[in-house]
Amino acid sequence: MQKSQIQFIEGKISTFFKFANIQKLAKKNKVIQRKPKKITPKNFIISHWELLSKNSFSYDNWAVQLGLLSNQKVSGQAIWKRMNKEMVSLIKDLLNKSFEQKLDKFIDSQIFKPFNQVYIQDATHFSLPTVLETKFAGSFSRYRKTATAKIQATFNIKKGAFSSFKVNSFRDNDQSDSPRIIEQIEESDLVIRDLGYFVISAFKKICSNNAFFLSRLKPNVAILSPLTLEPIDILSMMKNKKEGVDIPVLLGKKEQMACRLVVLPVPEKVANERRRKAKADRNKQANHGKKYLQILSYTIYITNVDKKVWSANDVAKAYQSRWYIEILFKSWKSHLQIKNVIPEKYINEIRAEYLFYSSLLMINVLVHPFFLKVSERTSKENKYVSIIKICDFVSKNMSAFLRENNMEALIDSARYFCLYDSRNDRINSIQLLLLS
Image (cartoon, rainbow, N blue to C red; front, side):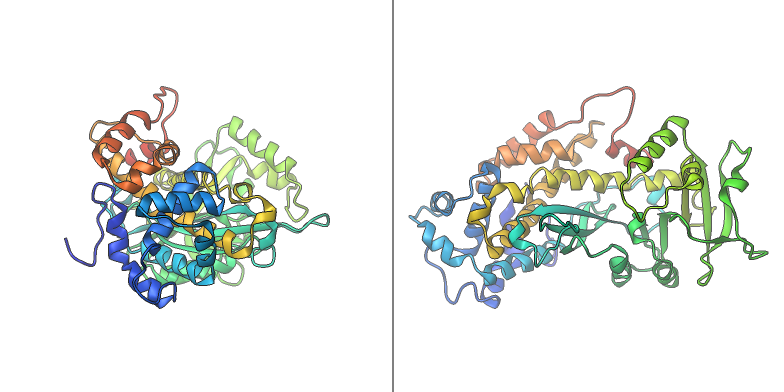
């Protein structure tokens, strides 16, 4: 194995900390000045992960876990002294370092074979204690202040690893983050994006890099005929058509970017559910007029992937891969209940921020790599592992993971207890990706 790579060797966390050179990073961030005698940065972090599984966050309880890990007596006050901005800076550096992990190939389905790397870009948010309202402003409210963090995540579906996180406030919209993906994509890469990232200028930059994109079409964006430059009305075009439509178009009145427009009808049951949700939407800025409700009978995609590479149905299947990152977000939220973990009167900005980044690091270094390792074993048996069940399994067995006692036993146990339930009426998200 090359020194520049990390492999998930039997799930050992120590592999990551060795690669990240935590001592060097700790000195850089002035967390330590000399070799620590009792509280090492590594033990400080992983003892905190043990607390995450116990939902018991007093400094004294933390000291107990740290003392058991280091075989020394540690006081809660000693931990309190080390909970500072330097420690937060260290945990952020380690999180960034975790994106350099080189994991085994995760998804290599036929639908993604024409592309070098495949990135899914999406966002999620987490409620935080109101003490963080200044740094992570939540939704606007006339009644009370709120604090909410938004995570802009980019996931490499082929490698099964996150390539970046950006953490900002709930009020920072996705569109402002849309161009950031340009920094990491290369020729023949594919970017699959949520509607929140719909920016035509960013799509044009992806094209200029000889890369590819796939997105849903944002409502009210102009679609023009490339021959006549006349607007195309989707409802008129789809009238009396039972099948889908796949045509070349120009996107936007000013930008006029060339791409494919793929319009596929959805079952009436799905369309009615979309309309029900749209009518229940209280956002005053949403345009939910009659025409908008009618167009919910269709799923509309734009892409610059050629018809020779993807059929219209392939476009729909490829976009379904976004469900995987949404399931990852759901698994995060089951563990990042930061607002409810520490009573408001005991928390401050430093403590809350450290908790937030430490939780993300644990998921990136421990939970997701373990999921990939178990999935590697079960896929050979045509069985599929639930990431949500893996999160629960890791949480309940955190002590064994942190002490790296018997990783093979943990993998075997997860192979039995963390499988998706067998269903004949539908397939799970992993099957969707593997069978594409």
